[in-house]
Amino acid sequence: MSIPRKYYKRDKHPTARTVGELKAALAELPDDLRVEAGFGEAMELVVYNHGTDDEHLEIREHDEDED
Image 1 (cartoon, rainbow, N blue to C red):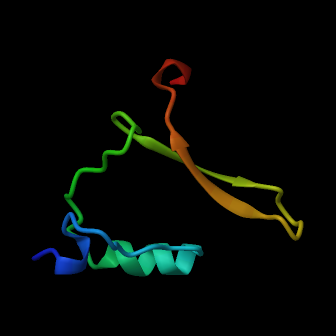
Image 2 (image 1 turned 180 degrees about the vertical axis):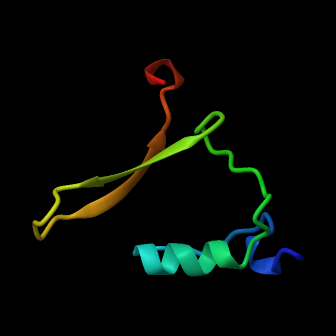
Image 3 (image 1 turned 60 degrees about the vertical axis):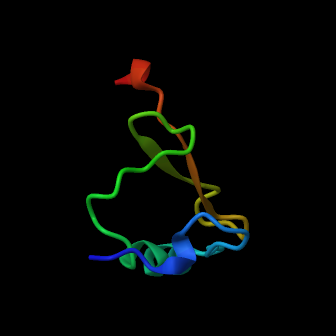
């Protein structure tokens, strides 16, 4: 799978504001592409404020000491 030019290092990159937009963007990338951005070896996906109007997903650094 090739990587679309919009993901190359330039001024404007794809953004995601919802899980659906994030999933669509990730679907354009190879499954074995490594993730980096201060997350270390892995990242955590955490949903906050379950059942409220402020329910949202946060992607944060995984604390490997908690394993």
